[in-house]
Image (cartoon, rainbow, N blue to C red; front, side, top):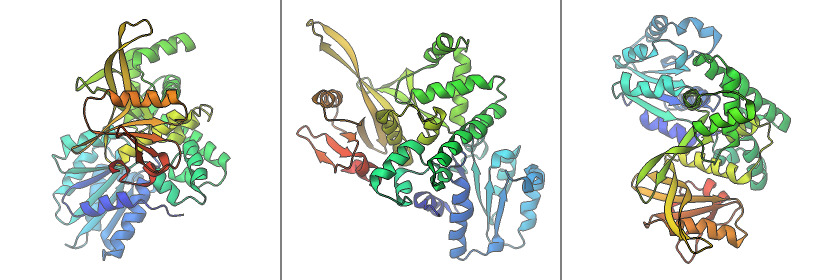
Length: 417
């Protein structure tokens, strides 16, 4: 089954022959190699590029172990270029090569080669794009399958697709399996034997048990504010382990660098400033998060929130968690300070959106809670409530937009309603 990744393929098309190194980043097994070596290669061939002018190197394959040597790899590429016509280099998992920046910078000096590389670690790539490539690195971030991509390849109706996506996520290989047991075992094995193992080996972590428990805590806490101090206290009280704030902070950074998780900072909407404490962390793939917890904690609201967060990133938005300071009277008539939360403050270009996510809006109390936060935002940017289900978007009397998850996920311009 070939799953279309049209949005990413389009990003490669518009960057073709732009004189920059196209760096495709993302979590392992999210489809970077398939995008480059199958979909983009097919596009090149269909548009007149000779097969001999496409140079393919997968550095994670044992057959290319020698080419992990930067000088040998550079010479191999040079030798493959037999004439002055344009060549296209597809270089997979470039982080396996030491000093890869020098090789890529050397290739930039060759006028008839267009370079595309993939990598699974932001520490090796994103920061180096700025510092090493002097403005000539062009990053394309790839994510696991969005729900729209997943649904397009799913053999069944929306409700079944949604239940499966909420449970097993969008890693392409997991989607290919037909049995639930296969999906579950694949995801659990990937988390432990690929992602965690990579993080431990790359960062020379001595106690891999600590980072495993840290992953469990973060998986349990999606959608909840947390910080290294809280996590350290949890280790001490529940595990009897002393795990310093600094070490926890470093280990969270390692998980981010492997694209396993990402953080949403807290933004004070009225004060127009970031609040450093109590960030929220979300998993890049909800199936991996569920697998890490052995599919035990299936809180639909938090899972929905994680999926909405990932969808906003796929759409190129900058996403923060919003807080609104208010003073209200309590039951005794006294004015008390409260912090109301907005699930997401979303910025894209000059546009801003405030988004709340709710699984169940049947109770009047829940509606009051969600709308109360909107009412206290001191500006007129669009305010959207995303609820579980297939409801088409509509506006209530206060101008708030309410839409079902199905509409939000399957319409790329759903924020513009």
